[in-house]
Length: 156
Image (cartoon, rainbow, N blue to C red; front, side, top):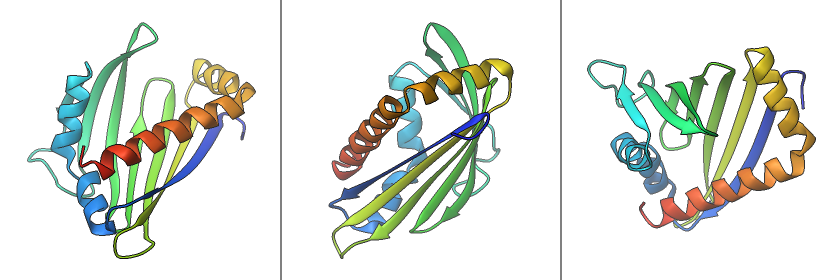
């Protein structure tokens, strides 16, 4: 862990062609519906809605008993191989990338990186506590990415 930050990486192979994985990853309306069905509030900030880089959302959700607000921006959209998001919340800045590598005509490797940096003392303390259980944090991240890959393979 770097001072005030944490980077997690995971990769999963998906038995779906690269172009189809990219199409599913960029179906933002489906992601919005899924977040809302899980209790989040989602609001598009870009007017009119942008389908590529520059798309913005405000996402409100409850985590550990408190309401959280995340400002999410699609920073890069390079079809069919890369998506990059930046996010800002009260205590953290996030950068997340998804790289898609075609392994064959029917298989794709998805490499996901999440880089979180603290914006406040509370954020630094939260990241420090996660770094103390780095192995468990990495396993939870790997499990979440694997579950997400299964959902992509299933078409959501």
